[in-house]
Amino acid sequence: MASLAAHDVAPSKIVCVGRNYRAHAAELGNEVPAEPLLFFKPPSSLLRSGEGIVIPPQSERVEFEGEIAVLIGGRLRHASESEARAAISHVLPLNDVTARDLQRTDGQWTRAKGFDTFCPIGVPVPVGEVDLDSLEVVTTVNGEERQRGRVEQMAFSIPFVLSYASAIMTLEPGDLITTGTPEGVGPLQPGDRVRIEIPGVGAVENPVVGAGSG
Ligand code: ZN
Picture (spheres, rainbow, N blue to C red):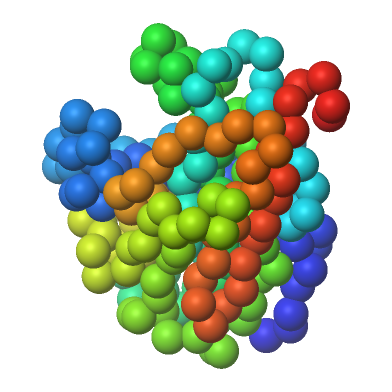
């Protein structure tokens, strides 16, 4: 499969999973749900490596969430886990930037997760070049490690999440699915540099800027 640049990623939707790692659910005072907890980020939130994450004036607590994301290469509707797995075309690192204070006050997560610049992504790597079962994600802020998680720690596997989502909504070629964040989430301040790396796949690294400098 062909390589893609991050600017070639143009999903019809970005499907996300909340609370997919037990330790992260616990650090925010939540349980892992009985079924995957899905939400969307808007495609307008996408950001390339090197571009600035803008802290919006509406929030006083913007946090990083390092995640393993995949692109879908075919249409999935009511797909089995094996069909879903076969439809994954690329793997990429993703930062599910979140206004934690607004997530708490709003209940619905659309505003907290949906600001422009809140979805930095790395360059997608063809799935044939990686081992889907041994992926790891590492987050550093200003060079200091803050998160490290592995796919086998997920409550719901990537194929299960895709199969589950495809029973709700048709997943189109090019759609982007991100699979939740491990423990260690924390705040970002203007001047920080946040890097999400999937070893063997790649990284996305962004400076953080205040609303006035965007
Ligand atoms: Zn997330």
